[in-house]
Image 1 (cartoon, rainbow over the protein chains, first blue to last red):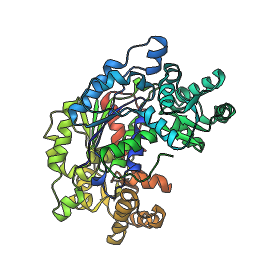
Image 2: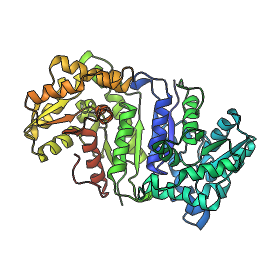
Image 3: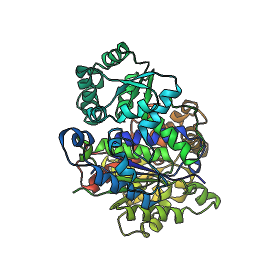
Image 4: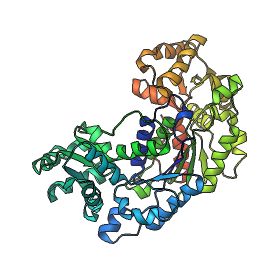
Length: 236
Length: 236
């Protein structure tokens, strides 16, 4: 009997759909009934995570805990949270429920380590970067993190907020290749897309080569944790 | 305050993601917080609907009702069911909860009527066709339904089960253009894609012209029912 997954989602809603699609694609199944039972809570009442960390915006923890409890009550046996920045609040969310909560940055770090990377570029929101969410997970896995220069980091934020979340500017108008070059110059062997909005943009731009999709790493970990057979052996 | 949507999903899981994406795309929102709160239950324990109607397979009603109640308990205020065939069991599912359940075939029929169609082709599973799910909804809206010939209907079933659900055969290998020609010869002015797997295939094949995506009609109705502002005025 496979376990029921619960997704604390809506951060943003498109990133939650992206995770669901990856779970479906990574599950070996030939009929509806062979897939994993997933309950996804696209809880758009969760305040912006980056704003909370950097600008003293509303605390997302109470609503994240409400979502976690809602999913547990509905029958979810393993929780996951498709928002990297939200992992800054991991302990408070995991502590609110009695079922396990998977940890996306740790899953991504494990995949980078398994691929032999000693140094990895981190593309994430300002909140994730400054909160040290990936810094800690990567160093624990023996991978040294490198970050975009301040000017390039502003472009990453534009890509996330105006390109994907707001769909206000065309993705092609943002110099993403320059961002990747900047990381390579600093010695990054691989790059982790450490914001759930980024794989959506990178896939559209055809720039996934050498980039680890943290969402995909989480999806693969979830498929295995649920007890289903995966279609691949690693998330690359 | 927008209402919370609950999705009785997993029939199949990809079709549920497709509905979620359409709800997101059809909602006018510039940030995560402006989107609609949606709880999606991808309940893959729901038995095959077509098999139940045509071959006396396991009854999906108890599990559909469980999913509806699970969503109501979790806080959903309006339910929707992204599976056309499942609407054969609409009354039993709607009767199990005290919140309203939107009706996809009726939403699609309303959109066909609004577009001035007097005769519409119905592409659906054998279960949906023989159960008369669209027959009833279309006639109530004053639209005459026409169906593919038996040989063409077999191709529609192959497209749904082997092409989309199982990903066993390439979509291009199925003569979908012949199916559309067959309906046109019978006088169909428009075609309704009355199985949630079909818009996925038709979009990939670039054949959406003149076809109403019942999933999109349901998504638009859901956005309005939730009290959010829609990005379009009709689902075509």
